[in-house]
Image (tube, rainbow, N blue to C red; front, side, top):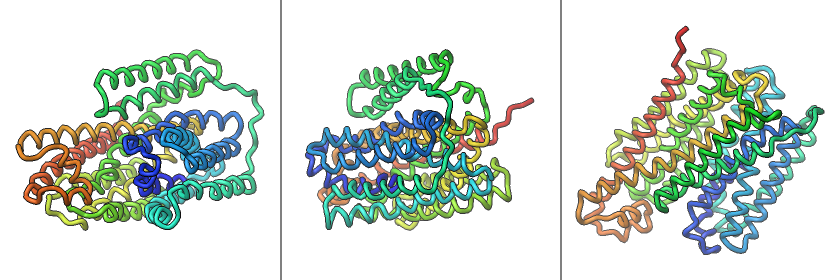
Length: 462
């Protein structure tokens, strides 16, 4: 369900915004979901410790199902966005808790790695069929059905959990850090809202939200050192190896989304292809991701985790380097082929790194697993905003050097349907400017992968 929702929504976006009259909120449909995921992910891990991960996962599924129903019957865009945020809250549990559960029920590292490989592959497989299924549903039924489909799938999942997963329910006294949860949620919310407002409002407002978020997160850190039952044990961040794992998680994912986000823009804006072909650009990447997840156990049996992570990080980096040096005249085959390396690398890195996080965390497995998932979401939000700034600066620089083009033309260039309305004689210049902007994004992403490699190979001197 999570993999389908992440991709199927993109196909249905035009129909949703047309029906609910919300074109100005198109970006927020994705942003509020990520916001809900970020706010809730650390809390789900703690709730699982208190009431059991089986029951907690089922609660997350129920929230996701009810939010799906609310989105399907939404009378306006505002109701839809609130429901989408709530769906993100459920999605935070759905995304992180399965990894915790596997860590709890499978002690053998080889078996656990194999199981996590299947978990990663299921998400990638769903992301392949998501756009296709979304197109069929929108064309032959209605966009509401992309949410209705979650109801039977969710109920089936709850039943499968109930029948097949037997868990010893914790018997210790219920203790939950409500103040800490409030500080964490509000801090993450303010920080992420500030990031999402970049380019949309005045700098003062952006800084206000970002600084408020950092202040609240600082207060959360202070409070966690004084409360009897903290939401997140501060000792987790005294574990240098574990902190390094978290940083590699964030850097690797932040670098990868440079390709994952802008490969389709490359296909449509530079090659003049349709949105359909733009979506197909990522299919080799997703297939390679599945292969990477399934080969994780082989690498685990034949090499150290550090060596395996180096292989995965280098292959992701290779994709970004290829895209950096790819010429404006390069065909779609090159763009799709470049993504194969990143797909394989991501599949390999995130299975091995997730197992490593759990091993390095020891008794804090549940919370550490949730934090590692949070690092991916935070990296996606932060780097999406950063890549937007990099692109806008490069485009503005290109416009200033050519008197006959403007940013409005460049916006039209990224959509094949509006690109045909542009003066044909200006297309080469417009594509050259966009090419420079996309190249700068790939360089930025590559820089993150280099930092991840440095972190993976850094050893503290005795």
